[in-house]
Image (cartoon, rainbow, N blue to C red; front, side, top):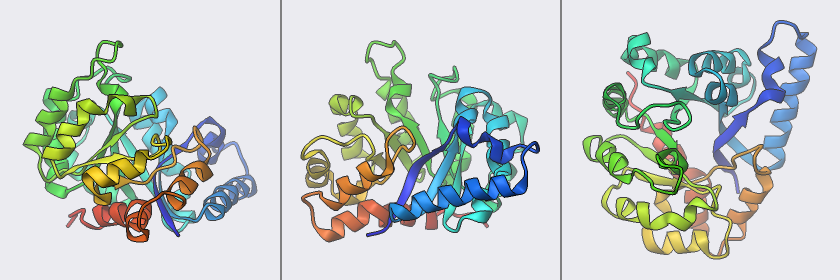
Length: 266
């Protein structure tokens, strides 16, 4: 079985790949290590996102990610960009999306709580509209909707985004703990066919099986959340899941591959 990993991170230990202070041979060795680790876990395709873009500055981190040249050096590897409302008025956003696509960007991620903006901000609405026009996927971590810090998730705001952008593939990331609050997002999964769940947090017994039974395997997207979680934990979770082989194939690769192929960039 091969996998398409949506949720892979370039963190601080990889920053040297975008630095001019290191020799090419050191960077080649680092890229080969990443390639080898993906291969060992049967990950044929992956989307990598920069931790710097979340922790420091979205634009700087995105540019540094491109400078690693991972997408050029590793077949099947693509980039995930972090977005904030600033992106809409910093750039001609429609042109920005097209250029990002040319540079192998295949996902945009938002962290409103971490980066201090409202998920349904005035400029974010404009961003979603542009991305929906291109059918370009967006991903959000459920805890980024916890606006009080006391497990009060602003699900109404997410519902509004989904209601206004039915062509926008929207992927919800949930940790093991956040899966306990499924009552907040189950109604959205039932109502909106453009909402998907990334599975790296579904590690409990029968959890993936339960989602497949309730919503079908087409609504689940594979991710490892590496290096926060070892890749093999999530690949094995799918391999040994008590579901059909076709359902495993949907989750492991086909669902995400279909979303990526439906991006409409002229």
